[in-house]
Length: 241
Image (cartoon, rainbow, N blue to C red):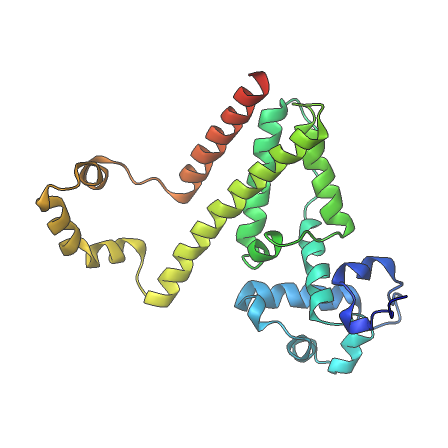
């Protein structure tokens, strides 16, 4: 028989299986701790998160936090679930499955842009809080309008989720580059303009040249919508093949 896990070695997901302090007499509550952690992560990134820092933000002792939450991993689990529960799950309207899944993708994108730290967390092993599960169940219900096969429905939701995560990651990477270099995208292009001009004048890369000189420069939302439309069209074609 294997020895039982110590509290610190237990998976953070087990937070949903234990009783947690509640009650109006408690000044410091789990919800307050989680909200403060979300605000901090939104402002400074997940790397700024620590139990000590959250205690400072709340004007409390670190020990008081551990009466409600056992550690950083458990805190992040609760943060993820709280963010997934920020907006109610939309009621099913008159849209077909394709329109409904597009709406799901847009809502997910907006949530990730509000909380950039969530991209990394959503790309890892899934959290299993009630809000995360409810959101997943909703997405699967939409996919199952297109197929009765649960495996295919899961693949559809996974493909859409991957598209959203990839698109938002690219958006956030550009914002990070702007903060790091102190240059906007237009300023960066101007700084490399001389080099690009030499490449064009060499005549060796005609397709690259057309892209630079003739193509429009769509914004992040346009690129996202184009990719989403291609993905949904591909799913529809695959299901009818």
